[in-house]
Image (cartoon, rainbow, N blue to C red; front, side):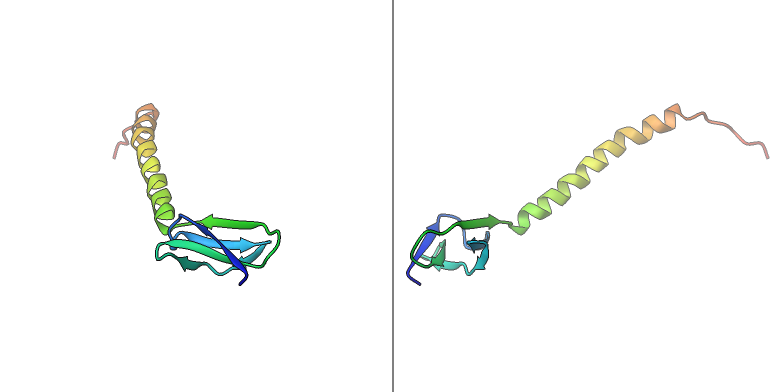
Amino acid sequence: MDSSISTRASIQAGFAEVDGVKAPVIRANYAFMAVPVAQGNHTVRFEFAPNSFRVGSILSAFAVLLIIGNFAVPLALRSAPFQRQRL
């Protein structure tokens, strides 16, 4: 490792690529992320994909479906003609 790039993001936040190849993310100064790179010009890409974001997205989508259902079902029942069947 000739040098490294560090960021302020938490080490648990995601992964990194150097020139399109996955690179190991190491701890820097106990709390930050660093990626080892060779000397020269490189393209470094950090991707952050915490599990909390995925869980929050799923819960939000579920809540939106519940809200839509809460309004759509009564409207559908009210607009449908109600017919009693005789026995």
